[in-house]
Image (cartoon, rainbow over all chains, first blue to last red; front, side, top):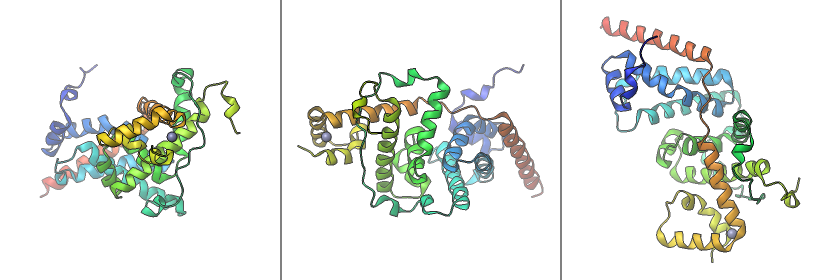
Length: 207
Length: 85
Ligand SMILES: [Zn+2]
């Protein structure tokens, strides 16, 4: 067994610098560090395993070829996310030509922010399910959002990019990010409430 | 007093604590006086919590392996390109 990789103690900027200087191991370490997140992101946006794998490869290969162009003003992680989001959206557009894929600003007008389900949740609902069940519930809820909404939610609340970084990655305005995030959060809250509401409050159930 | 609709429009600023002091106090007052918005705030916070706690699943080994193969090919090709000038 080889000893644990020493590169883990290096921070991102060090790894990028070393990768730029031709150290392929440093770039491989960056890939190892972020591949799970990038794959998850691509899978949720494209909702297709094959596309997600293509995105994963294209994103890291592109990043490798264009490493010299990477300025280091933003984080490498934000940069790779941006590439992956672009690739994912292209895949999505190729597969579906319907309006639901639209990333343009028109999606932000109309459609009120409606709140229908108001119910208290069980205490720590996440403890009532196995990890697998919980994962299935949460992923299913995200996947049922429109692409424009779920992408914003994933970038802001799961990958924890800033509003500005999200706007940049999706090539939309900051106000668009804000309004989509609000609706994404409220829609998810609504979906999860159906799952996690406190039993005994069923007098409020309408389904 | 803010209406519920006005409150909801500022919900993200309230949750992410990006609103100024005056608005924040107005929003806080609304939450203490409006049981519905209190529940919405609470369950939206919990929604964000459960998602933040969700670790990415392990990538399938074959997906990881194919990525590594593609990457090594790319690295070899770039190295050859640099050597040849
Ligand atoms: Zn209210």
